[in-house]
Image (cartoon, rainbow, N blue to C red; front, side, top):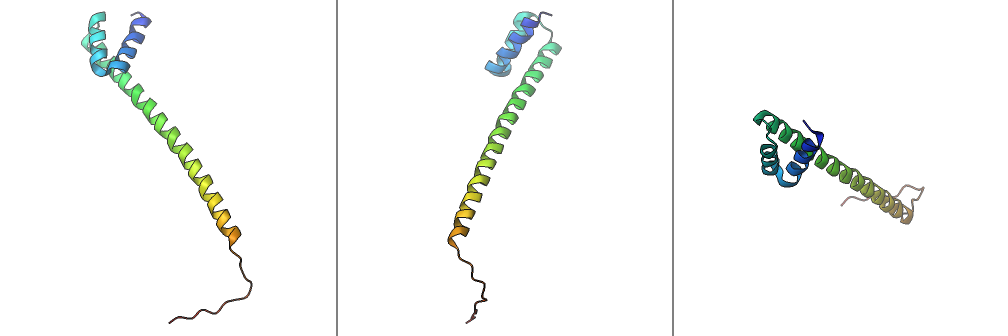
Length: 92
């Protein structure tokens, strides 16, 4: 099988979902088993791309929030003055 046919099927399935991949496979004269295999491969690739995209956003957002939280806490602690003497606590 020509590699350009496989690449074309992967791209058509990626762009037009399963319908595009199925029609492209039928136009190339592939068997039903080859069509199912190519569609499964394409769907798995799309899922892995989405997981990678979501993981990248999650890690960047987590680092950003961690940095902001550390800055906020350090600014709050700069404003607080601690005394060395114990203070009296009254409970009513």
